[in-house]
Length: 411
Image 1 (cartoon, one colour):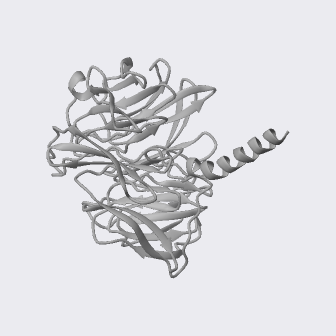
Image 2 (cartoon, one colour):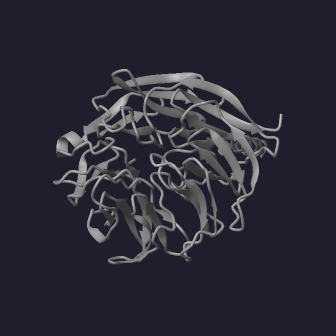
Image 3 (cartoon, rainbow, N blue to C red):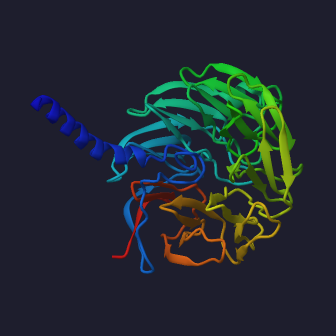
């Protein structure tokens, strides 16, 4: 009896110590659910007097890839000289646990930056990395040891496009779906175990928008926005269930991810005159409703919260971007804040953490009535294009010079 009580007590201690860290993971692009929302266990401190407190700072190389976090360790992915660099960093201290270098062949053209664009994905004991050259690596998360590697763009003959490969692959239970962009294999599914090809589909050019997984009438479906067409494919076989045009020829990109906006509806947005669509998928068909330029995001994925969508409208390269709140059911913004930089939006502790690429940060209530910040803060000088991550009360951000772990405090 004493043994059972002691064992139960030990279990409770382990649960209270370990589970909060596990629940606070940010294992890949846009967090635990790939939608910009942090774990419900996260808390966002700070008030009108909030100040960003930098807990650690690490030198950064080239690239626009954000961080991923699992079990108290952070994966940083950037480029140093002629190599892509993967580092495992202790979240609490910034201590480097291991570093791995990978050959890098991509050369920036329109944008001179030659570093990786895709956020790492941590799955159990593995970390998956997609390079700007279109290579897919699977490493052991504990040590950085390479498990397998596929040069997918080279294998299938895909071109670099405007900015190299920039669509972060979708990872399912035992497989990975990659927006490769080759004529003979636009979308490729490989095994998580060994990287072998499971299926290929379409001949569509790649976009910079990352796929999402959804369930439609009990069937697991992956939604892949390519350059000109968005596809819904059966995860198991790669069979195209439905498709609709989204994109525009010419010097344009699709980069924002699809987001769920309640019921069975999803929203896609792009700039360059493409605008916004709502789509409602069924097993073998899809209903699409065009919403004009209700929201036109060049690359930042908006966030759905409290029944409304919050996000950037406009283009970084053209200036004049704004921050908007929209109701997907209407045709006009509910409010708009002018003079804003392009912003990444995270949902933390039932609040919006709006991170401008110029280093300014706003904490908002997700209100449809007006733009009313609870507090504002400013990060060190730099350009913060990489997607931020949030884990264990810390915002992990990358400028063009440094990686930072930031807490917000009134002291």
